[in-house]
Image 1 (tube, rainbow, N blue to C red):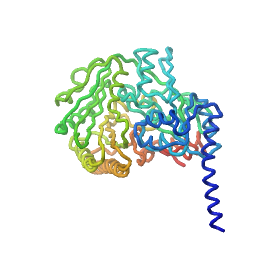
Image 2: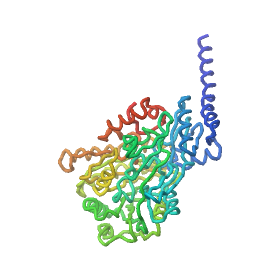
Image 3: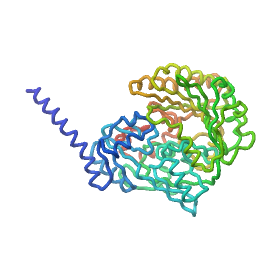
Image 4: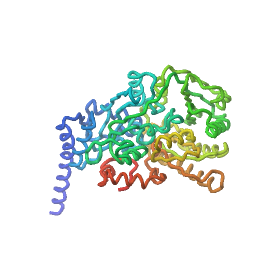
Length: 493
């Protein structure tokens, strides 16, 4: 008898599940908002456009594609009447599963929110979260040539997640983080209302969205400052791994004595079964860099593919060749203060190299470590433009590490997960030891959200966390975004 009751309960529970799944689809559909069921062409297209195939492996119940803030607000209101979890997707760049992807829940894709408007009066642009940076820049070029957006360094990076994590740009040493260039956020709050956040209204929300992720609301439009730009110079230098000591010294010298605010670099070591190479991204905001700006690197005799580009868009589009679609990948980060001697940089690299070597048997694996300068040239501009939650001091230089593993198959997920944890935890341990030994300054070391792994304690490393939490409690007192989104760096309960 008890067994029969148990089976009936299970059957009833199983019967209810498809009904609940159908409810969110039918509710949104009845509101006139575009929504795709599983296995339709539109559904499949969205899932195949993630940067990491692991995110595309997650299959949402349905995918809503709102076209306006009003559509987004209606979806949020309807979500209060069901139990479904949800995720919001912009460009699909973030590889942390569940952050912009979801299994058996509602995926909200901003792909229809690709507006670009230019205001001649104040030289600002309103852009939608569904754009990539190359598309946003191309649209701006068509509306008003000679203006630039402080955005991603690879054109294919999406606007939404990039902005909410802070956003590091080739133009950051002139204008700070991308988020420091926001004039206004149009935001859908947890209760479904639409508000603006700027320096005059909802000022606490305005500040919290600069590095706060998905904890406060869904941004449906960004009003951004634009900046003058003409022809730019950039491309890549490639060095053999045998020049590693010289490359590390050149990195240290470049950051310590940052030569020109119009210059930017990312210096990356790539390791795979048949690859052991430095690939350096260079940028200069002008037709050519003055003598002396990149001499520390050119003196090493790199294979050189730099050139003068007719437009900033052309350079961003060129950098898309380094996006490896179809691979699974994970990303993590760590921060080191400077000054750091080349020996210290070599110790960091040796640790990374040891871990990278341990996973070379993984099919299709490419391990990379990127040295991203964060000099006072950037942090001083960030503070002058009102600051952000990251709150880096303007009198301290840093290097932010981006730690990537890309690989082929889900059977290796656990091995790569363990390797990434080993890399960033080991780097943190090395920094802490060197600080105790007096070889590095004992200073604040936050993590960079855009590069952080889902297991990393983003909020535990910020000194603005309590301020951000109080803001979150004001705008989402019931914790809707904490409880109902499928992923993200959670801020309280």
